Image (cartoon, rainbow over all chains, first blue to last red; front, side, top):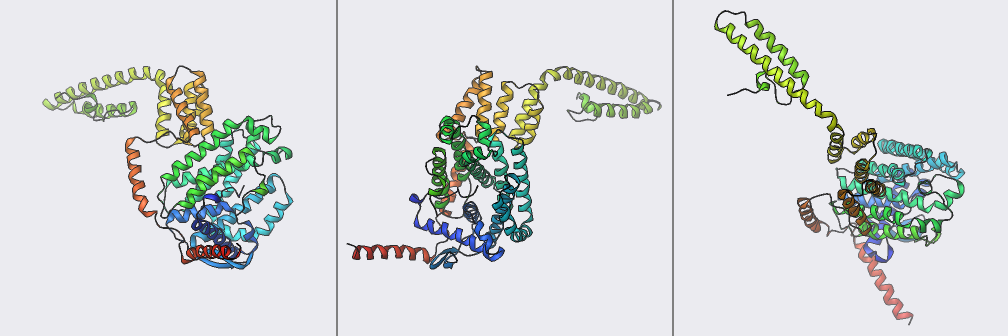
Length: 290
Length: 209
């Protein structure tokens, strides 16, 4: 579910590469200092995107300093200093990761997920104490998602709505002012993440007989390549529509800073990832790493 | 000046049947009592009672005739109500009202597609619109809506605002342009990493020829 919201490297300015790395590493360090070292393993790009989005919206600048980190002990790397917003996002990162693992435990009963849950338990409790409403939102939406999945929901958009609504409500919780366009953007990004993840997991879900909204919407699955070719038009409409709506919502949000990085992610990164997954070009392990 | 029946009963326009009946009974009882006064006061009260009776009779007749037309307009009124709810942003209430309708005709699918569009479920919206068009192929409104929605594929979202909305948006964008010059996280380190790259490039060019 996490790891799809990425910038597009070729069109990335150096300044934005540093900013992105800084936000990612800053978030990781914030998790470490507030919730412990093990939870740092749950750091993901999606919450990094939220960090970028909210810092830009709130007009909160980040101070980037060169620091060491446990994975990079030799050369110093750009790291954004901690601030109250980053601390909240660190808690959100933890809550999202924990609930995702718990969902895996309940659905597929994976052993790895169970171990992950117990390793994060203490940190989860601290994060829950820090942001109780965020925890409620995530728990509620995952519960709705589970019941839709159990009922075998056939509309991918209706299934995605639960996850998308979670992102909208989280954004609303974290933002200091109301902006429906910002919340719409969060909704659309959440929807995109859910659908891309579902499309990426098609083969695996088919093999393991797991719920997948696309398998329900378009039965007669044989293999992924044939499936993508057969349903190309509808899938194309689904994703293009979502991306177009994102562009529309984004254009109405007043940001406090230069939006080059946000634009790179939303208008180059996401379409590139959409293309990769819809055309099944690269398998997961060969995709761009940051 | 001629008083309207509403004014005679001391009510505002559009009062319900219950309000009219309550006002009538109260006012009539008041003046019937006064009818037993002596002289002009009694006569005046009697005239008022007649006036009140006529006003009540007229209003009741008016309301009853409008009820006859109500049933045939009920279905159309529901769609008007749904449209009003959608415009007011109460999408879930509109969906509930739509779910309560038994007949799923072209109009039903058209309004369902509007609700889905508002919820940002574009593919589901398109499917509903396609159903509306297939059930009512001669309806130009549905065809045009489907064509506008298909333009989403080309990256054009059907506009929701009129010319004022677009002018306002242009103004807003112009105002933001200045604010967005500021770069987030701009520190000397940014320049130093660029400088490092330049140095490396220089060194590489010197050594590895």
